Length: 101
Image 1 (cartoon, one colour):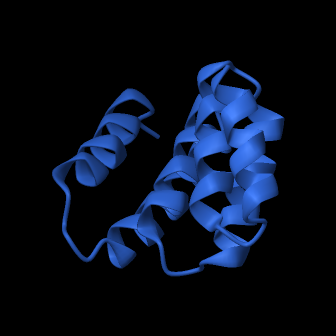
Image 2 (tube, rainbow, N blue to C red; image 1 turned 30 degrees about the horizontal axis):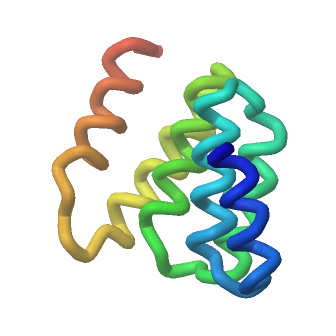
């Protein structure tokens, strides 16, 4: 049902990056990573300065085991994170700890 609402939201406003990101987040929870990846990229294309979109993209890279890219994207999310939410740093640290190189 959440996917249906996300689809309706996107149809309502095709230029709303948050709607794309939300759908991507739902898809990643369903382990549909390739689709989720594309929706996060669309969100970033529509709003390049929103840190949440980069964090969610990094989450997907991490879930797919593409650790090097995940780290780079997390750093971008942290850089853009104006409110300095702790969970951005926690996500980066947890990924780095679990995937020591």
